[in-house]
Structures are given as C-alpha cells and as structure tokens.
Image (tube, rainbow, N blue to C red):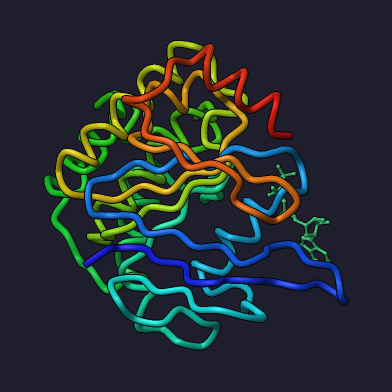
Amino acid sequence: MPVLQAMQLGKQYNGTAALRNLNLSIDKGEIFCLLGQNGAGKTTTINIFLGFTAATSGLATINDMEVKPGNVATKKFVAYIPEVVQLYGNLTGLENLDFFSRLAGYKYSREKLAGFLSKAGLQTEAHKKHLTTYSKGMRQKVGIAIAIAKNADLILMDEPTSGLDPRATAEFTGICKELAADGKTIFMATHDIFNAVNVGSRIGIMRGGSLVHSVATSAITANELQQLYLETI
Ligand SMILES: Nc1ncnc2c1ncn2[C@@H]1O[C@H](COP(=O)(O)OP(=O)(O)OP(=O)(O)O)[C@@H](O)[C@H]1O
C-alpha cells in the first residue's frame, strides 16, 4: 500500500488551474523530491496533502485514507516542515519539542525528548538554549524531532534547504536518509536540483500544475537532471 497517493488530483483557484490531473504514488521509505518553477503547483500539492486546502477534483490519500480539510484521521500520519519552522523563541529546543509533542498527544520523558533532538542532529549543548539563538538549520532539526516524536509516517517539506549553508544542507540530507531508512516517507518541494539528486529516491518535475516527469535518481545524474529540468520548464 502506498503511503501517499494522488489520483487525477486537481485544484482550481478562481477558474485557474494550479494543479492538473496529478497521479502519484509514493511508497514507504521513499524520498520524493518535487521540482518546478515558482507557481508550478508544488505548494498547492503539499497543502492538499496537509488538508490545508481542498482539491477541486480527484483524490488524495495517505495510508489509503482520503485527505480533506476537516478530516483529522490523516493528520496524525503527517508532519510538516515549512521553509522556516515556526517555534517559540522564548522556549528552549527541548521545551518546544515537549510542547508540540503534547499538542500531538504524546508525553515523553526528558531523556526521550533529548534522544529525538539528537536523532534529528541537534547537538546536546543546544537542547537547553532558547530558540532565539538558533540558526535556520537548528530550527529545522527541532521540526524534524517533532516529526519523529509524532511518529509521523509521512513528512512533507517545503523548500527545506533554501537558505541553508552547504554543511547544513549535507547534514540535512544525511538526516533525511536516516529517516527513510527507518521507514519514514518524505515528500519535498525544492528548487535545489543537486540536493534533490543527492537525497531523493525519485524526482518529479512540475510545469503549469502538471507533473511532466518522474524519474528515479538511480537513473539520472545531477547534470542530466539539470538539463531535463531546463528543457522542461
Ligand atoms: N490561495 C491562492 N489563491 C489563488 N491562487 C493561488 C493560491 N495559491 C496558489 N495559487 C496559484 O496557484 C499556482 C500554483 O502555486 P503554488 O504556490 O502551488 O506554486 P509553487 O510551485 O509552490 O511555487 P513556489 O516555488 O513559488 O513556492 C500559482 O499560479 C499561484 O499563483
């Protein structure tokens, strides 16, 4: 059973198609990277799977359950990492994780919470510092720790490497691969072609709301992908 499925999924905003007949099936442990120009429909796709916005046609499922606004059943399977992870600046990393875990219905010991932060790559010295002192990459790690604490099967990410320095990007890639090896499924919208090839198991290219290509990263080099992207968009 695929973790994420789109069947003839479409979205119109005031008569304009943001998403057209998207068909996609993503299995457990996959990292799917979605590329496309601004306005191609990547965020719209993510928003539908988050239940933030309703599709106007077709079907979106997570673990075989239909996703739609108001249907809370699929929300427990999903975690979302936006480009900038919004957390409480006056709380520490540990306190933020504790707070958001409780919101999701989980109460963990200090040790467990620290374990999740470490698994997400956050150094121990940072756990007890206020979020105001965190870099973008560190905030993202807390976001990943929240996803782990929530036991989310599917992690949706919107431009997660934008604004990260090369070291933070490489670290992020390693963490995504570990999560996938643990059986998490990752769906990420990105503009970063080279990171997509490094981290992804499959890459999609969107144009004008349509998925134009879907290729396995094992079948393509970064240069070939860049070429394909430039020819497509
Ligand atoms: N709330 C909205 N109301 C009206 N039109 C919208 C809305 N959200 C998105 N759109 C339109 O839908 C299309 C797809 O936008 P979307 O944000 O999904 O693209 P994207 O691929 O995520 O782009 P970016 O890389 O800039 O994030 C665009 O034409 C956009 O203007």
